[in-house]
Length: 464
Image (cartoon, rainbow, N blue to C red; front, top):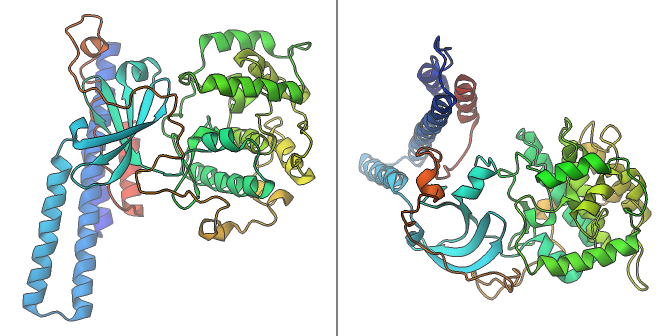
């Protein structure tokens, strides 16, 4: 039997009895603990089997290379000893726990309703990372199911992208040239396509979720945290009253531009809400109807409109007005008004936007994402060579830790407090279930292959 077959059989044997139905009824608390345990064990076995698979693959590759090089027995022994030492060190690193003290904090580069983001350097490897700190209490309250855990916070260390985010770029530039907007929209579409191929829908795309790397290319972030879109209760109440409402609630594009200018100024003085702005969320999500991946194409249309107009298409003076505009998009979507001397939107761009910002059953891309790729707006885009092309904007930084493309002027103090909470009975840390964040610690494993994907699918089926 092949290695893939053996490991798949082991994964099956490990999990074969997990889904047996108990004869007795258990409390909700017990069922929740069982679910957490399943998730913890599944992650452990998947990581273990993944490591076994990749380790065997590395050893086979080494032996093949030694055979091709026709090494002597002495040389082979030396190569193998070096290989085994590398594997031993890797296992030692896997067992090592991470702490905030393992990172040198350089600056705060992001701030949100439930998370802060810091530029930091890992002390042992000198690697620059973006460290996201999330307060457990707020994540627990918003039902986010999201990699190391401390007493009050969860931490996620990610790649640091030096070019900042698209939102900051739009705040500084206001309106992009159409060729620039076209390039970014094309790369965003490729991000969405890759996400959909993995079986995920983002549901909450917005400019701040698109980051610019050191070469000027776009990368998508926060897709794992936005799986479940939470709505404020006041939004739910507002939605009930605003669907189909007409009158002075709707504004023209000139008023939208003024409103958006005011909101951007206010945005720089406060942290974002947990839910964020409704400017880019599709009406079917707001109405909590069934939806598919085309909700992400709606968001793409909103972002493309903003890049070319300087403000989102449904922007209102406040969230309520914006919600009304989104829910009544048939009446509120209009060609933007431009000031004298500004580059106006072409017919091709406007046609694409209209075909994205429409009813889901009419939306471009509902059949295939190729429908969007083949639109005349993208006729000059070479999709297969896009990542190898030169972007219209390439970040210029003095050194790796330069944060010139991040707007940090309105952030709070950049330090990370490391402390143990007081013995306060109201403290979430003291009240929350002990195992609420069990198994949160995670380290990325290198490489993927079909064998590991098959084992993951087997364990998923058995544990769910």
